[in-house]
Image 1 (cartoon, helix red, strand yellow):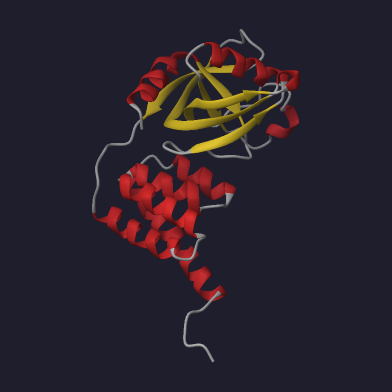
Image 2: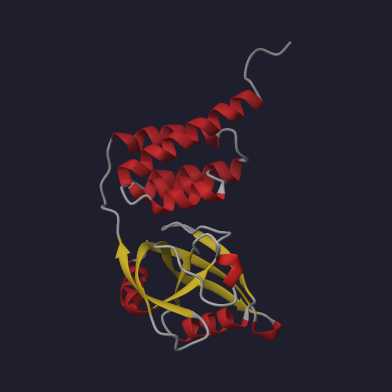
Length: 220
Protein backbone atom coordinates (compact mmCIF):
# COMPACT_ATOMS: atom_id res chain seq x y z
CA UNK A 1 0.00 0.00 0.00
CA UNK A 2 1.27 3.46 -0.86
CA UNK A 3 2.63 5.36 2.14
CA UNK A 4 0.90 8.47 0.82
CA UNK A 5 -2.50 6.86 1.25
CA UNK A 6 -1.76 6.06 4.87
CA UNK A 7 -0.68 9.63 5.54
CA UNK A 8 -3.88 10.99 4.02
CA UNK A 9 -6.00 8.76 6.24
CA UNK A 10 -3.98 9.65 9.34
CA UNK A 11 -4.56 13.32 8.61
CA UNK A 12 -8.31 12.80 8.22
CA UNK A 13 -8.95 10.80 11.40
CA UNK A 14 -9.95 13.82 13.50
CA UNK A 15 -12.88 14.58 11.15
CA UNK A 16 -13.44 11.46 9.09
CA UNK A 17 -16.20 11.60 6.49
CA UNK A 18 -18.37 8.48 6.79
CA UNK A 19 -20.55 6.81 4.19
CA UNK A 20 -22.77 4.35 6.11
CA UNK A 21 -23.47 1.36 3.87
CA UNK A 22 -24.84 -1.69 5.71
CA UNK A 23 -24.92 -3.75 2.49
CA UNK A 24 -21.16 -3.75 1.84
CA UNK A 25 -17.86 -4.31 3.63
CA UNK A 26 -14.51 -2.76 2.70
CA UNK A 27 -11.27 -4.36 3.93
CA UNK A 28 -7.91 -2.57 4.16
CA UNK A 29 -5.72 -3.28 1.16
CA UNK A 30 -8.70 -3.99 -1.11
CA UNK A 31 -10.96 -1.82 -3.24
CA UNK A 32 -14.69 -1.52 -3.77
CA UNK A 33 -16.72 0.25 -6.50
CA UNK A 34 -19.45 2.58 -5.28
CA UNK A 35 -22.28 4.49 -6.93
CA UNK A 36 -23.13 7.68 -5.02
CA UNK A 37 -26.56 9.14 -5.65
CA UNK A 38 -28.02 10.48 -2.37
CA UNK A 39 -27.65 14.28 -2.14
CA UNK A 40 -25.88 14.22 1.26
CA UNK A 41 -23.30 11.72 0.04
CA UNK A 42 -22.85 13.52 -3.26
CA UNK A 43 -21.88 16.50 -1.07
CA UNK A 44 -19.49 14.28 0.86
CA UNK A 45 -17.73 13.00 -2.24
CA UNK A 46 -17.50 16.47 -3.76
CA UNK A 47 -15.88 17.80 -0.57
CA UNK A 48 -13.52 14.82 -0.41
CA UNK A 49 -12.44 15.30 -4.02
CA UNK A 50 -11.64 18.93 -3.31
CA UNK A 51 -9.38 17.81 -0.45
CA UNK A 52 -7.63 14.62 0.57
CA UNK A 53 -10.07 12.18 -1.13
CA UNK A 54 -10.51 10.30 2.14
CA UNK A 55 -13.86 8.81 3.09
CA UNK A 56 -14.75 5.86 5.30
CA UNK A 57 -17.19 3.05 4.72
CA UNK A 58 -19.17 2.39 7.87
CA UNK A 59 -21.93 0.12 9.11
CA UNK A 60 -25.11 0.93 11.03
CA UNK A 61 -26.41 -0.82 14.13
CA UNK A 62 -29.48 -3.07 13.81
CA UNK A 63 -32.72 -1.15 13.53
CA UNK A 64 -31.21 1.55 11.32
CA UNK A 65 -34.04 1.19 8.78
CA UNK A 66 -36.39 3.18 11.01
CA UNK A 67 -34.23 6.30 10.81
CA UNK A 68 -32.10 5.92 7.69
CA UNK A 69 -32.88 9.45 6.52
CA UNK A 70 -31.60 10.76 9.87
CA UNK A 71 -28.51 9.74 11.80
CA UNK A 72 -28.99 6.19 13.09
CA UNK A 73 -26.19 4.88 15.35
CA UNK A 74 -22.99 3.87 13.60
CA UNK A 75 -21.16 0.62 14.27
CA UNK A 76 -17.90 0.99 16.17
CA UNK A 77 -15.62 -0.55 13.52
CA UNK A 78 -15.34 0.44 9.87
CA UNK A 79 -12.71 1.01 7.19
CA UNK A 80 -11.23 4.32 6.08
CA UNK A 81 -10.07 4.62 2.50
CA UNK A 82 -9.04 6.88 -0.34
CA UNK A 83 -10.89 7.53 -3.60
CA UNK A 84 -8.47 6.29 -6.27
CA UNK A 85 -10.75 6.74 -9.30
CA UNK A 86 -14.01 8.53 -9.98
CA UNK A 87 -16.31 9.83 -12.68
CA UNK A 88 -18.97 12.47 -12.21
CA UNK A 89 -22.32 11.64 -13.75
CA UNK A 90 -25.29 13.82 -14.73
CA UNK A 91 -27.15 15.25 -11.77
CA UNK A 92 -24.08 15.26 -9.52
CA UNK A 93 -23.95 11.50 -9.03
CA UNK A 94 -20.62 9.67 -8.91
CA UNK A 95 -19.11 6.33 -9.72
CA UNK A 96 -15.91 5.78 -7.78
CA UNK A 97 -13.43 3.24 -6.50
CA UNK A 98 -12.58 3.40 -2.80
CA UNK A 99 -9.35 1.72 -1.70
CA UNK A 100 -9.36 0.57 1.92
CA UNK A 101 -6.41 1.75 4.01
CA UNK A 102 -7.11 1.14 7.71
CA UNK A 103 -9.75 -0.05 10.12
CA UNK A 104 -11.09 2.59 12.45
CA UNK A 105 -12.82 2.63 15.82
CA UNK A 106 -15.44 5.31 16.28
CA UNK A 107 -14.59 7.63 19.17
CA UNK A 108 -17.40 10.15 18.76
CA UNK A 109 -19.64 11.60 16.10
CA UNK A 110 -18.95 15.26 15.43
CA UNK A 111 -21.67 17.94 15.56
CA UNK A 112 -23.41 18.20 12.19
CA UNK A 113 -21.81 20.86 10.02
CA UNK A 114 -22.79 19.19 6.76
CA UNK A 115 -25.61 17.02 5.49
CA UNK A 116 -23.26 14.04 5.67
CA UNK A 117 -21.69 12.60 8.84
CA UNK A 118 -18.22 13.05 10.30
CA UNK A 119 -16.56 11.29 13.21
CA UNK A 120 -13.44 11.42 15.29
CA UNK A 121 -11.81 8.03 14.82
CA UNK A 122 -8.97 5.93 16.17
CA UNK A 123 -7.13 4.23 13.33
CA UNK A 124 -6.35 0.56 13.92
CA UNK A 125 -3.22 -0.74 12.21
CA UNK A 126 -2.18 -4.38 12.03
CA UNK A 127 1.39 -5.27 12.88
CA UNK A 128 3.56 -6.20 9.90
CA UNK A 129 4.30 -9.72 11.12
CA UNK A 130 3.97 -13.17 9.61
CA UNK A 131 3.84 -16.66 11.04
CA UNK A 132 2.95 -20.29 10.34
CA UNK A 133 -0.68 -19.43 9.62
CA UNK A 134 0.39 -17.31 6.65
CA UNK A 135 1.73 -20.31 4.77
CA UNK A 136 -1.32 -22.41 5.59
CA UNK A 137 -3.60 -19.68 4.23
CA UNK A 138 -1.49 -19.36 1.06
CA UNK A 139 -1.63 -23.12 0.50
CA UNK A 140 -5.41 -23.03 0.89
CA UNK A 141 -5.60 -20.12 -1.56
CA UNK A 142 -3.63 -22.12 -4.12
CA UNK A 143 -6.10 -24.98 -3.79
CA UNK A 144 -9.10 -22.71 -4.30
CA UNK A 145 -7.46 -20.68 -7.08
CA UNK A 146 -7.21 -23.81 -9.21
CA UNK A 147 -11.01 -24.02 -9.21
CA UNK A 148 -11.58 -20.37 -10.10
CA UNK A 149 -11.54 -18.75 -13.55
CA UNK A 150 -7.88 -18.41 -14.52
CA UNK A 151 -7.67 -14.62 -14.34
CA UNK A 152 -9.40 -14.44 -10.95
CA UNK A 153 -7.33 -17.30 -9.55
CA UNK A 154 -4.03 -15.82 -10.73
CA UNK A 155 -4.91 -12.39 -9.31
CA UNK A 156 -5.79 -13.86 -5.91
CA UNK A 157 -2.57 -15.90 -5.75
CA UNK A 158 -0.50 -12.82 -6.59
CA UNK A 159 -2.22 -10.73 -3.93
CA UNK A 160 -1.83 -13.47 -1.32
CA UNK A 161 1.86 -13.86 -2.15
CA UNK A 162 2.54 -10.18 -1.37
CA UNK A 163 0.45 -9.87 1.81
CA UNK A 164 1.12 -11.25 5.27
CA UNK A 165 -0.46 -11.37 8.68
CA UNK A 166 -3.72 -9.48 9.04
CA UNK A 167 -3.36 -7.99 5.55
CA UNK A 168 -3.30 -11.50 4.09
CA UNK A 169 -6.49 -12.36 5.95
CA UNK A 170 -8.15 -9.22 4.58
CA UNK A 171 -7.19 -9.92 0.96
CA UNK A 172 -8.47 -13.48 1.14
CA UNK A 173 -11.67 -12.50 2.96
CA UNK A 174 -12.45 -9.83 0.38
CA UNK A 175 -12.11 -12.36 -2.45
CA UNK A 176 -13.48 -15.60 -1.02
CA UNK A 177 -15.97 -14.79 1.76
CA UNK A 178 -19.28 -13.75 0.15
CA UNK A 179 -21.60 -13.76 3.18
CA UNK A 180 -22.21 -10.19 4.34
CA UNK A 181 -22.50 -10.89 8.07
CA UNK A 182 -19.38 -13.04 8.05
CA UNK A 183 -17.47 -10.28 6.26
CA UNK A 184 -18.59 -7.86 8.98
CA UNK A 185 -17.35 -10.27 11.65
CA UNK A 186 -13.95 -10.50 9.96
CA UNK A 187 -13.67 -6.74 9.64
CA UNK A 188 -14.43 -6.40 13.35
CA UNK A 189 -11.80 -9.01 14.34
CA UNK A 190 -8.87 -6.87 15.44
CA UNK A 191 -6.47 -9.70 16.32
CA UNK A 192 -4.57 -10.51 13.09
CA UNK A 193 -3.81 -14.09 14.16
CA UNK A 194 -7.43 -14.77 15.08
CA UNK A 195 -8.53 -13.23 11.77
CA UNK A 196 -6.12 -15.44 9.83
CA UNK A 197 -7.40 -18.55 11.60
CA UNK A 198 -10.99 -17.54 10.91
CA UNK A 199 -10.25 -16.99 7.22
CA UNK A 200 -8.39 -20.30 7.04
CA UNK A 201 -11.46 -22.04 8.48
CA UNK A 202 -13.70 -20.28 5.94
CA UNK A 203 -11.49 -21.25 3.02
CA UNK A 204 -11.43 -24.83 4.26
CA UNK A 205 -15.23 -24.88 4.27
CA UNK A 206 -15.26 -23.38 0.78
CA UNK A 207 -12.92 -26.09 -0.51
CA UNK A 208 -15.13 -28.77 1.03
CA UNK A 209 -18.19 -27.31 -0.73
CA UNK A 210 -16.35 -27.09 -4.04
CA UNK A 211 -15.14 -30.67 -3.73
CA UNK A 212 -18.65 -31.90 -2.97
CA UNK A 213 -20.05 -30.02 -5.94
CA UNK A 214 -17.46 -31.35 -8.42
CA UNK A 215 -15.69 -34.38 -6.95
CA UNK A 216 -12.42 -35.36 -8.49
CA UNK A 217 -11.79 -38.90 -9.57
CA UNK A 218 -11.46 -41.20 -12.58
CA UNK A 219 -13.87 -40.63 -15.40
CA UNK A 220 -16.23 -43.50 -16.26
